[in-house]
Image 1 (cartoon, helix red, strand yellow):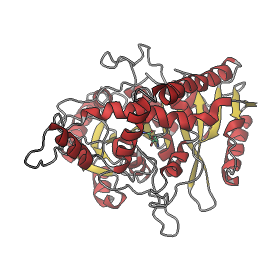
Image 2 (tube, rainbow, N blue to C red):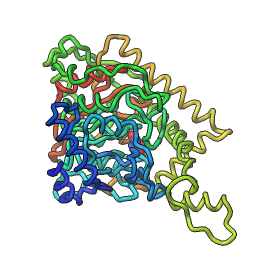
Image 3 (cartoon, rainbow, N blue to C red):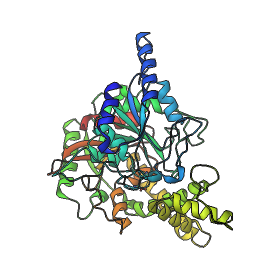
Image 4 (cartoon, rainbow, N blue to C red):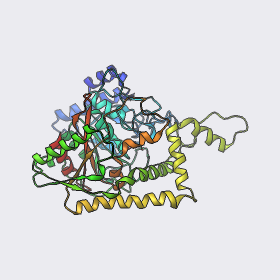
Length: 454
Ligand code: GLN
């Protein structure tokens, strides 16, 4: 913990930590030390973590990197952080992210962007997003691991961009209680770690049924670490042909083939599969996610939490809402609220939202059919490229940024577990990751496949 606190102070240039909690960290570390001495050390005892700013942490600023939550210090602790603390973990502070987890580069944060510790020619690169601070902090050795959340790829894409491991569990595996909601039917929290083994131990500690989240599954949490045998003989790995996108860079193709070869060498059978509705995943996601977001973000009204705009004489409650939300929400969040309100509005609900829900069901069925045909895991690229430069994806065309999520959103729409593992480097020496997608509730088996790739 001391070493991490020192590294964090020296590492401000990464923009990873937006709020440091050294007093809490030292208290928790001392308590952990006492437990270790007493021979009663739980799985995360004394492990110094960073916590994404999306998690409510009692008495500690929890702003979802938004100006609208400025000054908000929750009086409660999220279920995930509660479980981690019970397992002995130490909180070093809160981590940067895209505002309300909307973005793929950490550039929509009210705190300014985080920076990828990997550099080429002095170019500053994005650590990815939305869990960009988490990825930068783990890859930059400011903490041993960090929490992330993933609605459409926000754990897996930043993990791939920074050469670390990130798993989005099955929807319902981890409680969403006390995590600021973005798109409730897609959001899941998960670990971002340096190794697959760390991910297994961390996921074990944060998972489990929670009566406070009605969508959390009442299932036992298996021993994920015990599943890491490295034995994948006889397993069937599917390579979905629809993920072979037009214009895919040759080095991503090669990475994908290399990954498949590693799994084959370990005794798995590689098969071509089809997930025919893949091409509709991004459009469906960018209807459903903003729809749910516009509804979830209605609560930021200047009354209940955080920021309230200064009002002019004669302003009524409508002006108060308008001014507060115009000042408090950044551009990307406003765009999502507008798209979401539009697709949910009476005249367009059937044309957009309902249609997107039907497409979602078809995407889910594609995966079910692949698994029913005996596929154990699906291997795909994690991202269409290595980390891009900060400021290089023009904000003039938000779609360019949305295209980054092409390989990751299907997993959220289908509620499946997906893990990003670092597998190689591009020609500039930047990390590249592959994604493995598994059967629902089989994160242990999924991590075992990732274990072979790492
Ligand atoms: N980049 C995606 C978005 O902007 C995913 C974000 C996430 O997973 N939180 O919506």
